[in-house]
Length: 217
Ligand code: B16
Ligand code: MG
Image (cartoon, rainbow, N blue to C red):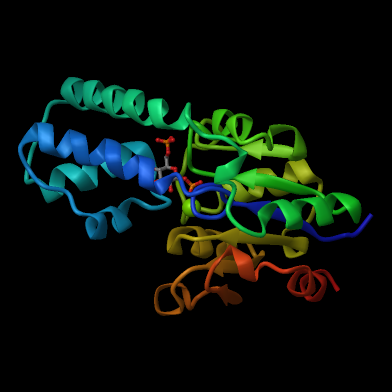
């Protein structure tokens, strides 16, 4: 067995659920009487559900009671799950299936490290649930990224030291969490935003077998 292991973020790396989060948050904002743009939605990527609502309410300059916030969080998640329930394996991002199959073939373990409390359901919908050695998600952590907790739990479940773990992430907070954990960080997205990562790729197509071979050497 290779001594290296991989930890994958979910939204933005395995699938693009950001578009569904956006639709649900946008509808909520509209119900509350303000607009929420796709550009503003960038601020919610990789951020927990509760923190996302805080950011949204700040954009709309709205203050609400704790009870009302809980109600809105449930409402948003209900709509989001309606989109999630339509998901199939067609929504797995390019290059990911090939990469996971290669890792399996080479006996290289991999885990999920996501902020989403819906991660197990999403993996089930796209048919990847059984592939992961461990799934660590928003239900397992008390501190959100950039705190390294989610990745440290994943490393423990993989039975690997941090310096042998390779994290694939699309959010700056996730890259910072991987770096703080002492892991190898691979970012997917904009170099200007994600320059703190050890490696930055434009998209998941660039997660080629050749690139992975260099990482695990
Ligand atoms: P949920 P990741 C994150 O997933 C999303 O990027 C972020 O937009 C979302 O608010 C968060 O999950 C929580 O999701 O409402 O499903 O618990 O990128 O960490 O896989
Ligand atoms: Mg992400």
